Image (tube, rainbow, N blue to C red):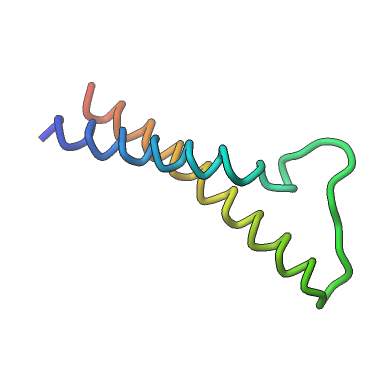
Length: 73
């Protein structure tokens, strides 16, 4: 059973890393000047979804690392 945890964890790590590579870190975690847009515009909608994509990538990285740790320990 532990092999499956490791395999699933590696898959989640791989996918999470690909997402983080393509999408930047969410604006909530950045320092300094971050892009902003007026509410209700297409630019604001795009920024929202890029942030969501970044959160998904970070979540997959974390879950992958936890699954690998679960499989190893």
